[in-house]
Image (cartoon, rainbow, N blue to C red):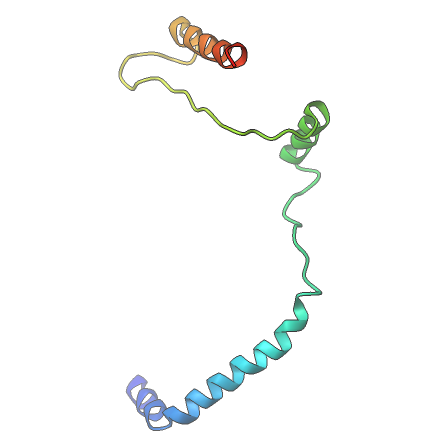
Length: 102
C-alpha cells in the first residue's frame, strides 16, 4: 500500500511540490491577519493559590523580583536533616552574611 503511494508521489513529484508550495503560500497570506487577533498571556489563573501568593508578594514587596536564587542542601550521607542545628546554623550565618556584608 505504501509502495503504491510512494510510487504515485514519485511519478507526480513536480505536481506534489507545486501543490505544497501553493498551500504554504496560501497559509502565509491568510495567516498574516492573525497577528492582530492573537494576544499574549492568559496562562495565569487569578483564583489559583500561586497567583494569589504572587499578588500578595507584589503588594508587600513592591513587585520586586529575585535577582538570584540560592539552593542550599546537605551533603548526602552525612546524616543531616533540615532541622539539624548545624544545618540551621550554617543557613543563618549564610543569610546574615548576605544581608549585612553587602
